[in-house]
Image (cartoon, rainbow, N blue to C red; front, side):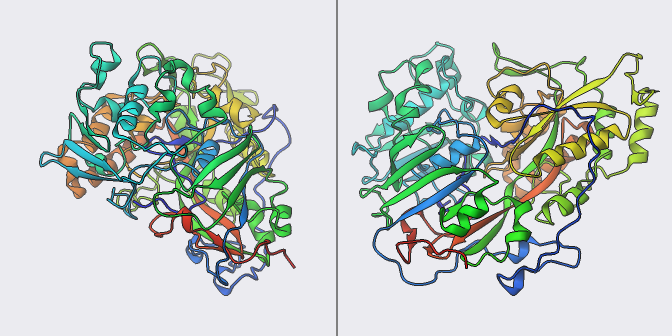
Length: 609
């Protein structure tokens, strides 16, 4: 797995939550109808024309930038983080959880291991590895020239220390879970029964050995923690205070191609090249990252105010497809948007989800009717011009070996939705339905900000549910507030019943980090014995056989269609406009390009004609 020069800076293993929301309002406002696609011919090249219906296809895009001209020495580029809210500023992978922070981190931090286009760990990264015959013991060797930005060597103790912090009882980040409890002696360390993690041994300054309780196929595709923590900086801190320290918020370091020079909290970061970077000195002198509101991104791109962005609002693409100073790249995203139902709470004491059989959304008939009531196929076409499309299962097509393309999910069928509710006892009492016991049913739904379509999209879902007699109140909140309310901090807002979010999934197909009992990111707070069984089987010894693992995850995808703790709405593409002066740049995986190779052909960005 190579660290790619990519606008999709990846979170490791655990899956970052990406949601966007906007202001407080009622779901009983003006009716919203699906917009018609805009027929705007694409002038950029003949391969990205719209269909007669005004639709595009992600298959027509390349994920690698065409190099035009020769690289000059040095230069500064500007990277736009497209968001209507500040980034949170938890700039260390051990403690961070949000996608905006991950995109900041991606410019100066990197994993010790890299992966290939099939998401399998390679020996091309800052560390190499060997595996014992039984598949349980990994021996890692960090390269001699891998150093922290302050010049100190990255050591095996730093890697061990990251595990100790995450396993500590006072750790307040999101990483602790099944990937860590599978390490020998880690649970005993967390419980205070041991002073060291017995399964982790420092063999030398640059050599670390980790023994896992069970050998699983996920160990080679993502469930190894690959981010060290600088012990010479954090070693004397209390674990509970680390995430709020200046070493995380103001002066973060790592060993990547660029290092943090200055930060304006939540707004911008200036990165300077790391001349000591282990792969070689970067071509560029500096990268300036700044938050750009979605409403101004087109102006910024046309004027050369930014050279590239993390992603481009899909709804703005048709009107700007002929922008003359950029090349559009595109790739199928490792992500899906979804509607989630609150089915319980987070048990902080035991670090597990606690389903509530009396939760408002506990009846699967209610959840199934709400899925039947929405036309996600048309949402993808009308809001996103075909560059997002109807989602059917919770393993996206970015993982084609395991995505069950034969599973249709639940089809749009308003008549069926009404029938389900009628038969389940949700009777109409005037405009809206009551609960089966005759009491009032009011569903509180929160959704996202982030561009012109955020509110109309959320209103479309509310209108669809109103149409089958459900009284749904809509609230739009900004990113950080939403994040906390759905439970990222372990506290579930009782005023949230249903929410609209998105998952950016990890390189490993194993969904335990989002839907396991001990996963903080299991925001619906869903658990069942059948879910436990399938998730365990998916990383069992028998799952080393690919066909067996495929069958397990096919069954799991159907289970989630049956039980509906969440339902997927859209699979996603990433569209990234890149100024024509940018060289050696790509998005996605398997490109073989690295950040230190990023270059420019001239001092100033091209400006749109």
